[in-house]
Image 1 (tube, rainbow, N blue to C red):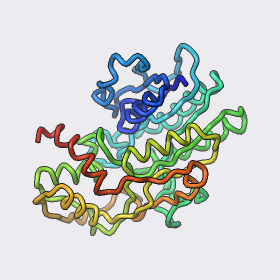
Image 2 (image 1 turned 120 degrees about the vertical axis):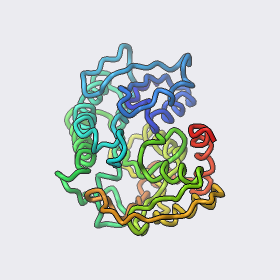
Image 3 (image 1 turned 180 degrees about the vertical axis):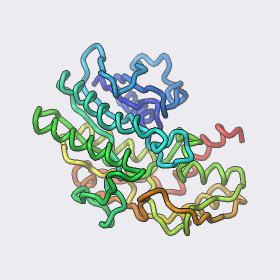
Length: 318
């Protein structure tokens, strides 16, 4: 296939480029570098099956030649207000990527009669009242809170994707991505994984906001990409959760990183108010992914951290 991947210079997008090329497909990467990193695609320079277009998906998209699949991954994704790449600092761009970007990429898929895959998120569940979260859960979101620029953009994107599927017969798929980590995460992203790994590698205190009882379910990027690729190659149109169902408290996560990396770091707590409606618990129900895609994550947290650390060491010069 000839595949267009938006957000190709991002953490997930760049790994998807690698996987599609490995499978023998031709890839056209697209990014405007607001949050993407050109270094993530540097190793693909000169690849005979890879080309790149610098473009903002909020504007009309034209790609010459036949397109067989469109994967829309362009969006700021970090909730951290301390990060210049966080969506609370890029609110309009985030809404445009989710709304106009989805509209424009669906237009490409319609023009080429191509299959379409939307990158959605577990954030559409908000601070969930259902645990673990199934795809049938409608969510518990604040539509005007500080996080809403991301949450509501993705919820709208899902609705628009299904509207194109129903009205125009577009061959669509929706993946709801849960917390993912691995090489190529931005060091200045501001989220818990890059923060903790950097602190541990430098033997600095690991900073937990709150009491550490809040939970996440961390999925290694290789597992996630496997699930997304299987979804792309499937004929399933309803949303599918892709994430690791092993739930871990932030405190236990900090302890695991210290142990795995052999760090001398201690753990400190900052009892600051959470960002808006930051969810207290997050864990995917992946029954649908099991049944439809025969997918399960296979990489344990400790192993994933070991495989992520060398990237951070190289970037930190350690």
